Length: 359
Image (cartoon, rainbow, N blue to C red; front, side, top):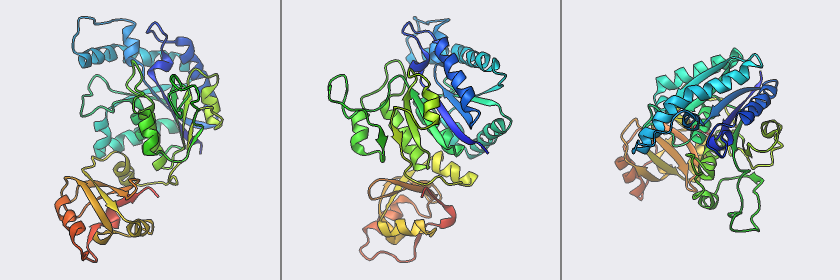
């Protein structure tokens, strides 16, 4: 079976300086995807609906920026999909559109339907084109940017490579506009707090993402064993180079091995509504690697407010995500376990049958 590659294309990659779509670039990206499909099953996550909408309307009298964005997206989404479909049709490739919100991921039944539908499309050699449903999304259901949507979709489908296509080449050791000595970072073994801080002010003008959002997407993907590449859509053959792991942009090494999780495990480790965080020591981390339950004796801290049977995130003391699980106790009860000098022995905080790790 072919490996899976998910390609996310940003708004600025698809646009011209005049605010309109760059049809030549879209055609070129489609041509590269056609070649990639000889070796990969390809999923495309594409921004650009709002920009496509601006080709028809501006809505200059609309004062609410959210409503204006949703109105433009409602016009532009159909146009954007039509443009892609027309170019893919030239290669006799059938396309399918999926408009998603984060709520679709948090609901287990919806998650299952999405996963089954997208996998069915791939098995039938149909090209899925995904975007956030900007028309219906709101603050609570929005991804914020399509980088997160791409990473979540990739983890759900257990892909083999995530490619984030931007309008710039990647990450630098400093702001290259201010520091001429700034160097391009070619490989990232681990996403550190320092790297996150370096990129936190890089929100892209006119888009919703930036280097920080790509770092966070790469962090999620690599935790699920998915190597991630950030490349420039303006670079010739950028997708083909990424598919060969020859991109000039940064390569993010997987933190964990890629593993085949059950549907429930895939949902819980990517999309379930996490209510809190439980931190554990090295002994507990070792026990989880041996497929054992998490005991109270190994818990070092707790964050958030949650109840019994809520989904919680498990981190080690370095803040690295270990997995998720259904807790047997509320946050207040677990805090008492942590405070107690004589740790209770044998008390299960998360049973192994309800615990999913990313090792």
